[in-house]
Amino acid sequence: MSGLGRALAGTGPLTGLALRRDRIMLTAWVYVLTAWAVGTAYSLKKLYPTVAAQQRFAATVAHNSLFIALYDPLFGRSLGALTAWRISNPTALLAALMSVFIVVRHTRGDEEAGRLELVGAASVGRQAALASALLVAFGASLAFAALTAAGLIFLGLPAPGAFSLGLAIASAGWVFAAVTAVAVQIAETARVARGIAIAVVTAAYLLRDGSAAKGASWLIWLTPVGWAVQVRPFGGERLWVLALSAGCTAIAVAASFALSARRDLGAGLVPVRPGRERASGWLGGPSALAWRLQRSGLVGWTAGLAAIGAVIGILTPAIGTLVGTSSAMGHAFTKLGGSSGIADAFLAAMAGLYGLVAAAYAVAVTLRLREEETSERAEPVLAAAVGRIRWAASHLVVAVAGTGVLLAAAGLSSGVADAVRTGNAGQVPRLLGAATAQLPAVWLFVGIAMALFGCLPRLDVAAWAALMAFLLLGQLGPLLRLPQWAMDISPFTHVPKLPGTAFTLTPLIWLTVAAVLLTTAGLAGFRQRDIG
Image (cartoon, rainbow, N blue to C red):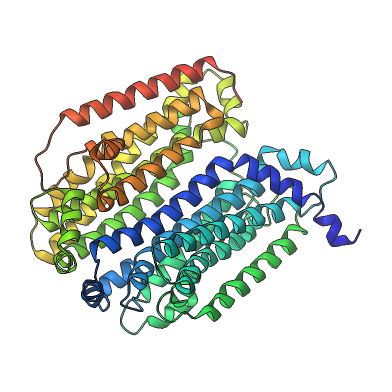
């Protein structure tokens, strides 16, 4: 067997094992991406059923720099072009994050947990784990591309545009999977590797957004997200642009294999900097430790959501022009967010978006308990004079308080940005209240994640599946005019649609009670079950 064959020995079985382990998570990711893409095309078809209506809407958004920054440039006037304009940005972001999580989980994550050391003791090559992780990530993006193309063709859109749109978005996933493969060679821990990869994704999106500025359109060619846009599905496809993504992916993959061959198992090219010999005086209990572990994440999430809130605040005055092109769209926004005007309805819908982002943070922070447990970092803490409930509660406090900080930052930044643009300072308390009203629904996700961790720890990924399901329901349900009983499944449906409607306390109380009950059940289950 050649040297390359020995290095890749066992890649097939490892790939099968990875697919077996991730069968629920991968299905959820691909389903959400496909449903978002096809559902958006279907909703646009309902909102703008005629060619004339589609062209009027396209003329409104084609030269609006705010909408170009928020979504993408528009390269046509057809339904397909509008679909590509609307979905390319968010779905490429989700495809990139999916790739990051897959590659980190099956490379650096397994190294930290000691699984790769056990696997490597068998007839498995040194590079097999990395190769299998990349194959799973590439395959997931390709599955999304195929299913999305099939769905768009079923809706009557041209096949060339449908396939080019699926491949354009999938290509972004491939690039960031390869970039993540390099990150896991550099970092010594899964958390740092994930942070590096997400930082690269963020930088890519900042470059894409910067390309919307006057005279800076050339920036779009510096980012993989921009390459996906420049494929121009349904707008005179330019498939040659995919060669840029393929070339970047090939270079990053080659670099990751070269770096992997030069480092020790469990080590990174950049070692973790050792801390001080003695901890600070305040770092003497589980609460302080939980804050120390979670504080950098909270800062990053807060900054990101505050930036989103500022963009929404700037965008709000222009929303009336957009929805004026379709009475159906006006009805959809009103249903999303209240009845006292299109602007308030839009702001209420965006407050729901803040809630979904905060819920993602809540799930991530709560499930950090499982990460600490499986990495065997929880046992030394629990071996001291620290009870299980006290240890778990320390992370839950960060989750509960941290979501409040996130939503307050989003509401304040949105209100200040709106007030600066319109001169109406009264928007600041209104939008702060609209954002923080999402807290009980967000806390319910803390309860869901805690209940799964405490009672069904092997199914903790179901917390993410629930969040994805509610994301789809909230974004597409009103546009597709789903029945009310279906919409009521999401906890965010029961949050008062502020600003624009009357504040009602009762549903918030019930959501809080449900969150408390789920959290209590999770704590009780964790107290009784075995660690690990």
